[in-house]
Every structure is written in C-alpha cells, then in structure tokens.
Image 1 (cartoon, helix red, strand yellow):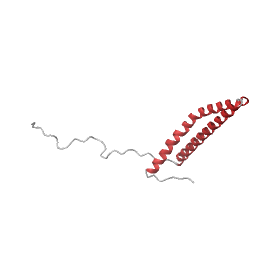
Image 2: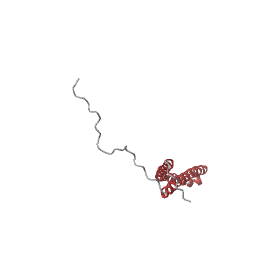
Image 3: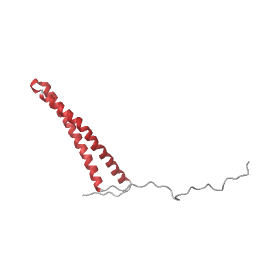
Image 4: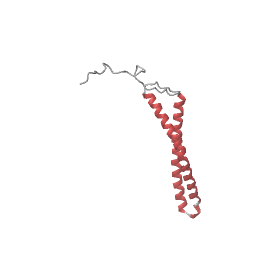
Length: 119
C-alpha cells in the first residue's frame, strides 16, 4: 500500500451552489391562443374544401363519361385536381403551425398556468 491517503472530501467545482433548473417558458398570451384557434379552423376549412372538390371531381368525371357531349366536365375535374394539389402545401403550412401552437397552449394549461379565456 502507498503512504498517501485520499483527500477527506472531493474537491468542488466553482460555480452556483444551487441545482440547475430548466428555464420556464412564459405563459402564452391571449393573442397566441387566438391565432392557434384561427390556424386550426383554417386547416379544417381547407381540408373540408379539398374533400368537397374531390367528390365534385368524381361526379364530373362520371358525367363526362356518360356522353361525348359532356366531355368538358372531365376538364373541369382536372382543374379541380390541380386545385387540390395546389392546396396541399397551403394545408400543411397552416395546419402544422396550428397543431404545434395548440399543443403548446395545452401544455401551458397542464403546467398549472391559469387559463386566460377571452369572452
């Protein structure tokens, strides 16, 4: 064995003497809640319009298939499909931030912050 003994205590690192606590996010404002609701409802409306456009395009294709004189309905169905394809990025651009904002509002509500409802 060696003649050296370990120190009686472990040396402490300089710094704060209290444990680290994660910084708390500030509570969400009424405007933030309002925009979260607006974005969610816009996404719902856009999705509903896309479903309606798809159903109308199928009906137009059926009408175009019945007679040769109704061939223009097929072109209208194609225009609706292009509209649906153009609306998908808009739906994503509105829906994803709305869902993230809504989740943050719910997490703030579960964290014990008082609800701030506006009439």
